[in-house]
Image 1 (tube, rainbow, N blue to C red):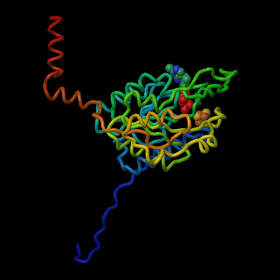
Image 2 (tube, rainbow, N blue to C red; image 1 turned 90 degrees about the horizontal axis):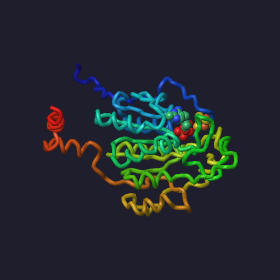
Image 3 (tube, protein in one colour; image 1 turned 45 degrees about the vertical axis):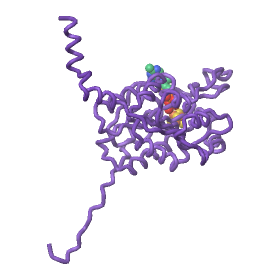
Image 4 (cartoon, rainbow, N blue to C red; image 1 turned 90 degrees about the vertical axis):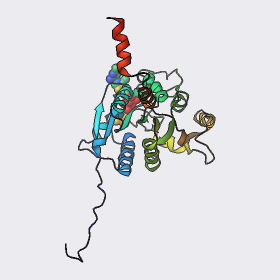
Length: 290
Ligand SMILES: Cc1ncc(C[n+]2csc(CCOP(=O)(O)OP(=O)(O)O)c2C)c(N)n1
Ligand code: SF4
């Protein structure tokens, strides 16, 4: 190389996470905003797409993995958590992202959600909450407000909605945040922080369904949500619960975060101490039947 030749430094590789599959969501669906925040979060982290897996259940929102260039698993209704847990346990080097709707997460998938929270599996779960079952044409979901009128609840839903933030907190989730699809920058930041958090990260994202839900609309959320108060301490579980259950405000931002040993760490420690090696356990089992 001539002495005075310019040295060119290759810029770090930027990956494109937008896949060739075009979203089939209705025009104006809140899920578009969430998808854009997912792209932005992945671009910010710069992961190679081969190191990322996007997992989902069934629903309009659960189609999201089709639109992301990464490994993907479009699973069964309500079963995003077991699949994501298995993937992370089998290959802890993967960045595992899970997506779905409020029906997928809190109705049929409610029990799996609880156990993902308490196990502290190192996955990031973004729930696109439109307070309805969009894919099956707008029935009431576990987060629909009382009085929600649909074809199957013509007199209005007689049930009270669950509180996803409070549910996650009491089940032991170590990262709990709430965002809004029409606030993409804030939502992106919450997803990035969730990915960086070691353990289970739950992000409740308001994502209106303009086709079926005429009450929990973009306008409603724009007027109703407020930023988490500046003096809120996200390490304080009591304060997080008070915020989550407040009847005065609908907070968006980081509600709770605490460092907690991740799923798998305790098992690996057991194996390392030799107390519970798989060979010993199997050996004892086989002896019983010999
Ligand atoms: C085992 C099973 N039960 C029921 C259904 C029907 N089903 C498909 S999607 C869905 C609910 C979708 O609502 P949600 O998860 O909130 O997602 P959205 O479509 O609103 O994004 C239901 C009940 C199914 N596919 N599989
Ligand atoms: S039905 Fe609702 S949730 Fe489904 S794509 Fe259309 S607007 Fe989105």
